[in-house]
Length: 153
Image (tube, rainbow, N blue to C red; front, side):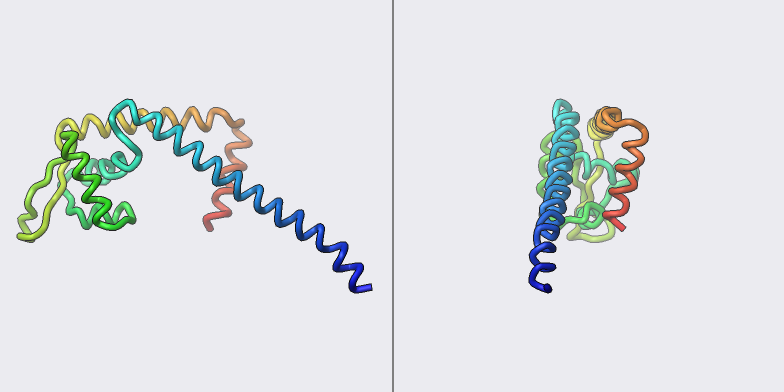
């Protein structure tokens, strides 16, 4: 009797497992597609989501920030921020300056071109986000938000 119950339960577990796999795969594929659309929105401006992610705290702070502070705000290691700031500096969007409070420290500051690039990048990003959400009905958008919130709580 127990053998029969196990035999009947096995396909149900397999279906649940494949269903879970399908949901997670779909979630990952969707995240990748959304990220690609957002990258495509800012790319014509010479930006990437990573570059915009560094410009954002600099614009919000309205003052130079240390590379360590940028790394902390971006939840990444300092070497990643150093590379991004190198690229942003090469693009003329950020400049480095000595930290007056720490002789060994370096601060990153937005240039006027960086302020303009940030503003244009954020407008492009918001437009792309709205386009993505417009593909959903209001009810579907609300349900999706609730489901995603449940996954992150």
